[in-house]
Image 1 (cartoon, rainbow, N blue to C red):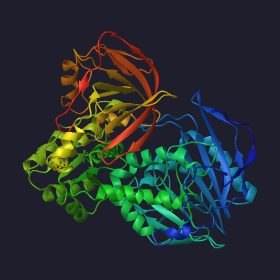
Image 2 (tube, rainbow, N blue to C red):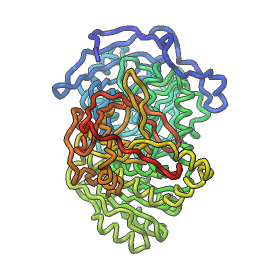
Image 3 (cartoon, rainbow, N blue to C red):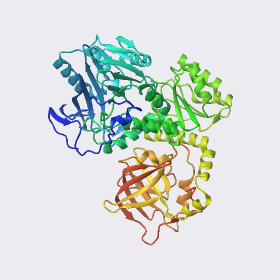
Image 4 (cartoon, rainbow, N blue to C red):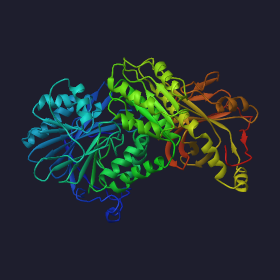
Length: 622
């Protein structure tokens, strides 16, 4: 990626010929009531800071531009970040978006990551000094460090600023700042009048994706500030959603990782804002949404409705702002939702006991992250959970690695005493979580979900097609392969038969990957893997090994001879040929991802043996 060094340039709001998905707004007013007052085709002045090297080899930079009347965005561009919270692989870096609103009073909406300390604060001060302003209000959408990490430093510069956030947000922020500040805990429907028409209205949006999250809507410009919601990890100089084709895989992946486990909360938030005539989504990560708002917001509704249709749900109980409870619980929840089961995220540190009783009572599974043993609130929540859980409810208990965890064995024993069934042995965290541990947690969530829906899934497959059609489809033969993938210290593999060449130039193929496969998380756009072809005379051992059910986090290559390809993914010694591949795009079907990849390299290791052929008797199963 080539960066220009300049102080300012002009970017058009919309590029001719760009592949947008804009829909005439008149057709969407009934559903989303989206107005088009901020989107303009006039050139927008964009100021770019110098590029600064962080940690030796990572480029960071700030970008400043007006996005509406009296409204400026400061985007912190993290060009080279390749992981987010370890388990979240990034292909195009990310951004941390912050906003200044100038009325009679001046408001700052969110800040930036600590790594941007000097760069962001210098940019912020330059903008405020040029306008002859100081900060009167700091609007904190939520307290995750990548958005609020610099709030203490901003308060040092503007100590008289009033900090506004949800009640839970203010509580978290006190622990982050370790200093007194003027606070304003707001509720849904509360407003702050900045003057000159900028009336900010607050909408509580808990669990998107933290319990303290809120949206802020400016009645003067039609901009809705949503922080993590409707964002994506995608860094580029274009500040808006102009090239929707390029950003869509990142938008969907972000939803799947962070919002899908909170699908019910997404649906609730969309219902709360449906009557607000927003025209622009000022998110916290990635391009600001301006040109494709109806469809991109609609996608959230469509995707969440699909997961909410299920009758099976799992309650995920975690302790916010404690150890790795937030991150690990999200990972477990993502594993659950991969198998088509909905989740309800519950913070045991702040939930109302009656609400907790209702959630646990309607759940067929419960995941409990170990809370701090010193928390009175957590003890109250645990007691409420134990009173509400039904016999034979399947449970998982996991450590949070917070230093004061309630012992998982004690928690599990309490659950068993009230009739719960252990779905997976307690998940323990012995060291700082790495990617392999996150992978194991995700697999545990998927195992739980599959155990809850096994009978239903089998019944659906049997009813999916009439016997004659099922037998006819089974006449489609295919080869037998093992797909292997690796990233950092995480590795996975699966048997694949739905494989087909898809293009000559570039040389490409497709692989169908079930949505609940463990390896699916390592086969996102931009990821690399190896396709190992099995021989017709010696495939049984590999087939039996990789078809067996592995415990969450188990090493699938134990006892298997392999060597690393140039992309570091395993090549099986027993394979007759292998191909090194890179994922280019993915097409979603109801139960699989059709993964299109380019073949980068390959080799035939046994020239005498043909590829094993897979023939089925019926098309309802693999």
